[in-house]
Image (cartoon, rainbow, N blue to C red):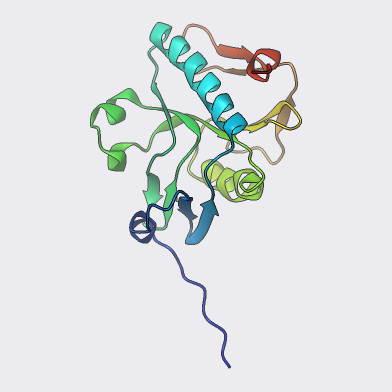
Length: 182
């Protein structure tokens, strides 16, 4: 009996998968499947998006969006960052195919996404030159900050900031505020 060769998934193949409540992504052909996020995950996504939107209203250096999304940098890549800031001109086209210049990407860890967020997607985001990548860890209430050329993250325990060069001041959020109970 022979072994079945693994399928190398393209973005087009992932987009054709059924809408069954799972979140499908592919990174260099590897299929990443995650169930619908937990409520706490979505609360953190909403809080970050709200804070970023308020900041970007004052400093219009991009547009904040949340998953679901179809971000691709090649035929074998299709990801759905939890929260991200994209180039406003690209967003105005209203076409996911044009949204490629991400200025900040944030993934909120879930039990099923931890490995792909910390390794597979982190390496992809570094490879394509995402200037800043945050991994929000709801269990430890910390944020890992990554840059394209870093081999280890900076772990933030008090606050986390993003300093886009086009803005007159950085965005900052206190982690006690982010992780406050419902």
